[in-house]
Image (cartoon, rainbow, N blue to C red; front, side, top):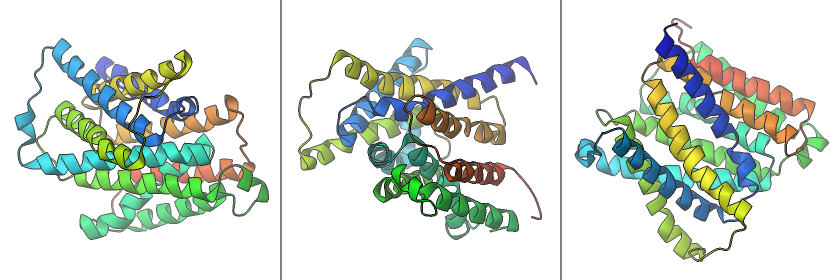
Length: 293
């Protein structure tokens, strides 16, 4: 492996570890999920604009061209996806919410034959069955103790977030020729903008008093988990095969599961661990290329 590829692998690993800690920080931010999503979109997009400025690049809004409305739609979906995920953290453990969220590849597999005309192969069918089995284990249905790990509402919110992100993934396949930074800045900005009417309707558009530690956690989510992590990730994926980047992305949920048990002392049953292995293993397998299967 070339030196720049090694650095890119290290960068993606770092960004995935950062993403994997967002559920921990959510626990210490006493804001409504829509307000947190708004702050994340604003801080993340502003930070990426600063990155472009510092690196001597210009933000070319014209690059969006005919995709501006599709970018706006996917940005809105990202904002709503954040709300559901942040709410899932409120109702269930970080581990369970994150594992529900990583059902996204399965959702993409199921709808791709209809929307993208992709073949539904034997391998994909097995991945779906294994992942759904893992979801049953994670849900706690088979274990009364597992009910304490996460409520049914939290699981549904996590799966809803996964469905929205699956839509973003599928729609992004139709957006071509738009530079990664420009696309991300537009989507993050739209994610923030769509939160404004949502906050007005919910009555949460107001000033909030945060303790220093809570304010620091909010800034960390906006700058570190969104701006810096996105900048590191997008800067690295340009130098790696798509499959390598996809497989490394599963460091995110593994980090979340481990930290959920280690730092938050959230219950982690044997069935949850088995479910995690099945979900993540099948998702990783679905990313691997294969013909005739």
